[in-house]
Image (cartoon, rainbow, N blue to C red; front, side):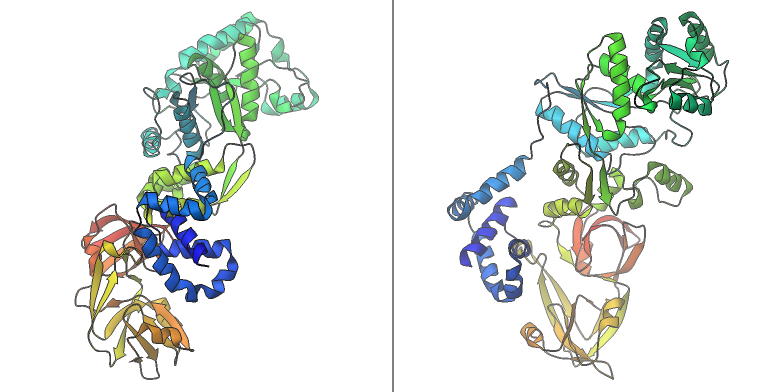
Length: 565
């Protein structure tokens, strides 16, 4: 067993900058072989000794020692660190141009991060360019543009460390370009203005029948198109369709809409335009004009891809290479920009960075690092398979980045007071981090009165031995709480053990805290005095509660945002 412990201590140290963590080593050993779980208490002294010895070695010595025991773990770690995406078809260094095209109905959320990160990684891999294009055509009445989303999207991209080329491009600035190219299609007799109802079009598509509007001449189509531009038709009265094959195997491909009328005010260009292109036409034009070489998009846009290819063929253009990725579903996370917009604007949410929006702004305020989001995304890959991934995968990536630097503190939620009879005054000393004693210590001066969590008090049973961490053992009796031993080993040896809990010594003035949870609820209570040294934006670990980031200090109340367990 000696070599097994040493192997995983070395592996953990190499993986995390030369310092092994006792907890991580234990978890890894059990994860590799569940049979060790039964004997972990007996193995603890050996593990602690090995962690100390390994952490005393120089990084080069750690690598050499692991190579002698199991060099395959070094190869495994190398692969994890590299995490290279599969190569793009037809990609040449310095010539690759990719684009991300968010619709500004709200900020980017954790689901949108995949397209940003993957495209950015490929741009960096090939030393190419990444364009940020606001896909701000007017949108539907159900999905409208939000003015503040423009800045929030740029902010989210920068937070993710995405390096987009030159200035942001806005589709709302390019309407005249789209009008120019649609007129070329009109001349080629590839389009027509349609006045049919949606019900009639559906019926025609079903049986593969052309509508009467389709037989208009290019000259008449041009006149009707000009009437659309002049505002002579109402919304929904006329649309411009492209002529495809009405016998096409996919009914959705038959004579799709390229332009429609919308007289709603646009946040950037006001009422300057009221004829707007749909996604496939605007991108068919822009991918060509902007020199995009590769497009990475979800499988839900395969129809748009087919239509763009159809348009490129008409113009005689070679389109970019398009790669479709499978949809990603994150367990226990509901993503809806439209719902978040409603809740944020109506005041149900605190704003766009409310944790329930899952926006990148909310993740940042919670203490999630952009590097963790990137690792989470890259682990998903870029294949066409549907993926269901637990949110804990993101938390695990983040935990590895913050656990070594997050000091540990006692924060008591819903505090209730207890008195322990016959307990003398004590000075309790604990490490700021149990696995890193060099980080310093914190001290409590205790008497016999403490605050513990209400839920802990409710778990106390008469006659069972309980423990206040690093302080004392005590028992609940019919008359109160009686002090037992101050010796930790006697608690371990007791056959009738209760619970181990954190606590705070009662003082005249207690430090208050609040923590905003991911579901929007708030936990309140008291925290230890050492928290006064925590600065805003610092992430700490609250004993038995989890990691959290200090967001503000308001009138002496320390306000945190919960990160994760």
